[in-house]
Length: 262
Image 1 (cartoon, rainbow, N blue to C red):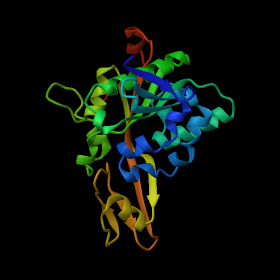
Image 2 (cartoon, rainbow, N blue to C red; image 1 turned 135 degrees about the vertical axis):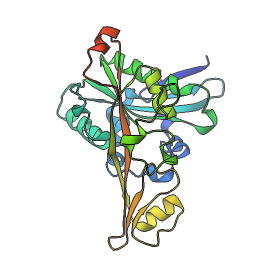
Image 3 (cartoon, rainbow, N blue to C red; image 1 turned 120 degrees about the vertical axis):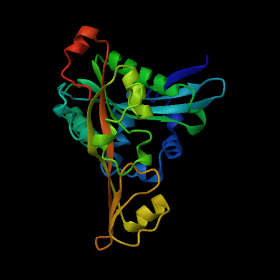
Image 4 (cartoon, rainbow, N blue to C red; image 1 turned 90 degrees about the vertical axis):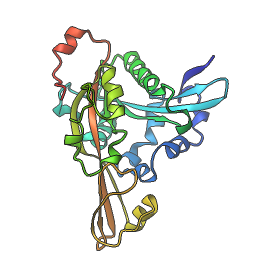
């Protein structure tokens, strides 16, 4: 049967070790979001059919894991808010209050390292678009984590998102995949996901020493972490880029969209 999509609602046992894929994909520090960590486990209980894996039947192996969340979005750039922390909290608040969702938010597309480079990124986005259509949601919105921003941690995300290649396409590979599919860059967000920990936490996560106060760049970090020894605190804000995909809309509808590509 090849590679197929299996949702958490269909085979929850595939998520018995829910951290295994995430730990293989993300740097350690990225697993400790202050706000995202509070809500993450609720995705499986509250929105089980919006969490899925790509499963190889021949190997009996999970290749990738995807996470999405129905949310309320008014269709404006301003309505996207300040990144993933704010959107996730608002989405759960809206669901708890019984407000109907108007868009699907892409939270993560986690492809195991040994299966990367096989075109699965497009397949992951295909599935997310299908989930949105099935739920009668006309937009897939994504707080994208640029894939090579860690090579340029001192470049503000507002500048990074404007970088282009010789052919005019976005410089960043993951952003480029989105825009090739018709995704519109809505806005960069410098303070999208907050991660805090003690100085010892950050030294453990990054395998670095922080002997003094101030900002530090670190391996796999998209921006510096701010270290404060007196408060025994390291504070990091992960930047993202909001990208919006119109689902099932005509070219004419897209031309009249409120979103302006940067």
